[in-house]
Amino acid sequence: MRRERVSDDIYVFTSDLYAQVTASAVVTREGIIAIDTLPFPEETRSMIEFLEGLGRGGVRYLINTHWHGDHTYGNYLFEGVQLVGHQRCADALLELGAPTLEDSKETSPELEEVELRVPDITFEQGDMLLHLGGKSLQMVLTPGHTTDSTVVYVREDKVLLAADTVMPLPYFVWGSREEFITSLERVLEFNMDSIVQGHGEVLLRGEIQSAIQGSIRYLNLLYKKVKRVIEEGGGLEALRRIDIESCGKSRIPLNGLVQDLHEANLYTLYQQMANGN
Ligand SMILES: [Zn+2]
Image 1 (cartoon, rainbow, N blue to C red):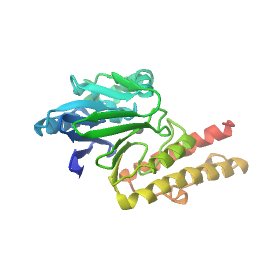
Image 2: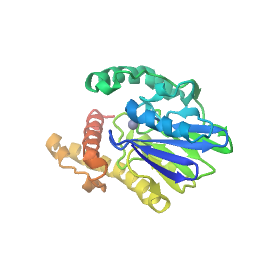
Image 3: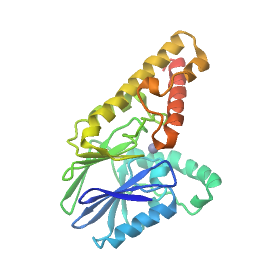
Image 4: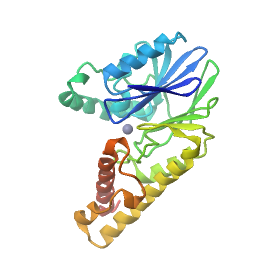
């Protein structure tokens, strides 16, 4: 696990074990707010140990940004900590998270001890504001990666903890390409010094515009190219020829994992469009 500081009071923890997934923590005068967990118990434990060791009142709240296991499997380790999330996240954890966890346990014995835990404090309409020890965290629903995706904006620090709404490559297999574009446009409205992505490197002020615009462009180009394949009756072979660079994105980030995400995006969109959705 790699640890860095993006502002005086915000720490980011990046997994060495799975897809450079990130979790964060905001340190306030009255305790700490953690945002997401790391996938494997060992790394979430070291994150908690570090935060408790700061002597700043321990972790008071944990926020879940969406239901995916790589961000939530550590929930159960935050004992006695109130868990906050969108109602859609609570619903999706029960409906989709529970069976996925059982499957993951089969392939990853390290997850054997993991217990599903869902948010106790939820919001359903509009944004949620969490105020603690001089910090204000604004939670905004930004569907696209998943239907329950939420970003967390720390007003005093001008840092957006974006989770998978901002990744090196937007991945919409569990969500919606169209909603993703609207959500990325919403993200650009925040006044940001940096963005903590759900996977990979922190984006600094000068990189934000081009990264987000590049993701919107990718989502639009992908649509155009898949549409052309369908119109020309090109089939799966033509679909596979739509490479990631031709949609304006690099194949290098996340040790090449973005290639797999791109292919999954292609197939999902092709299926939806071929079925007339
Ligand atoms: Zn995710």
